[in-house]
Image 1 (cartoon, rainbow, N blue to C red):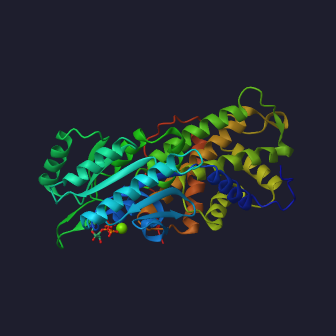
Image 2: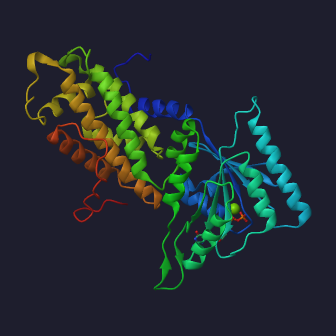
Amino acid sequence: MKKMAKNFNIVDDIMNKTENELKSIKPISILLIGKTGVGKSTLINSVFRENLAETGIGRPITKHLRRVTKDGVPVVLYDTRGLELNNETQKKVLKEIFDTISEGKKNTSNEEIHLVYYCINANSSRIEPLELDLIEKLSTKIPVVVILTQSIGDQSKEFRQYIENLNLPIYGVVNVMAQELVISNEVSIMPFGLKKLIEMSFQIIPEEQKRAFNNAQQVDIERKAKSARSWASKYIATSFGVGFMPIPFSDASVLVPMQLTLLAHITAIFGISMDKATITSMLAAVGGTGGATYAGRYIVSNVIKFIPGVGTIVGGVISGATASIMTTALALSYIEVLTVIAKGEKDGKYPDLKNIEKLMKEKFENRLKKSKKTPENEEEVSEEKKSKWKFWK
Ligand SMILES: Nc1nc2c(ncn2[C@@H]2O[C@H](COP(=O)(O)OP(=O)(O)OP(=O)(O)O)[C@@H](O)[C@H]2O)c(=O)[nH]1
Ligand SMILES: [Mg+2]
């Protein structure tokens, strides 16, 4: 373990720990199929963080298949092209797809494909024999979800029912509008169907890939928060539960490494583009970012006064119960702030650092005042007090 130097930098430590956590996440691989223009890239950019389809790096692995990845987003996309072309090309595309799948299934490869998103434009209202055949064959190898893209109105639902009635060996058919469709000044169709797609995907993918999928998706932020809360409550219970030796106040720094691990793990569960400045602001809100000893004591002394019934530290030691209360408040408020940031990020909005600090402080103090363990399934985080102060930049 790293020895704690006097000027040990807490922020760097969280960043490093988060990066290591991210490296341990096994990516989810998705095969994306559909004719040109159906909306494959639009879909991916809406489902995953960081405009993956647009900003990811694409590497051709065969003539008609590109492998798209982006650092920090644990997804491997296989993007197909050429399916709409002539018979000859279609045959080649199909061969390349099945060769790639087989290659991934070999023991020597660690690139098994976990899921197929088969995209069809909902307005086409027809599905060709070649596509039906392809879907059936794919289903024998990998779970397939058929996505009806750019879905508008009843006709797209009828198309879905039609496909459902074909009784294909697929997991499901979902109507989706991935991005707002502006029809006129007054009329637009809001995005829908993505949450359903996410839920279906979670049911299908292997347990090992769920962390990656949750980290990379940006549709269901509450799912990230829930998973973070659930992990944090277990971690805190094992760290400070039975067997926790009371620690002297003067040595409060022992709490800090546990708390850093906690924050890093939560950050990795969330999958959020956090930079040093953001983390610094959050830590500044709860006790400064100086040396670990300083931060540890600061947190303790500032926290104690908020906890009803504790008030002073009995006999100069911190008990497991007190440590647990403090750390729970830290974890839950951190999760609340990340939720706000993640929801903004989805719409391309980034909060001001000062506001992050303010929000973190407010959430943390509120948590301490409540000072009881909060159930995992909390109600959705209330919107930040936008009315009182301008939150977003
Ligand atoms: N508003 C809206 N437009 C969409 C949606 N999906 C696709 N489009 C439109 O369709 C166009 C093509 O979508 P893409 O996502 O590039 O299609 P693609 O399947 O990736 O096409 P290729 O990369 O050529 O295979 C986009 O420029 C959008 O204008 C959607 O959900 N909402
Ligand atoms: Mg595309």
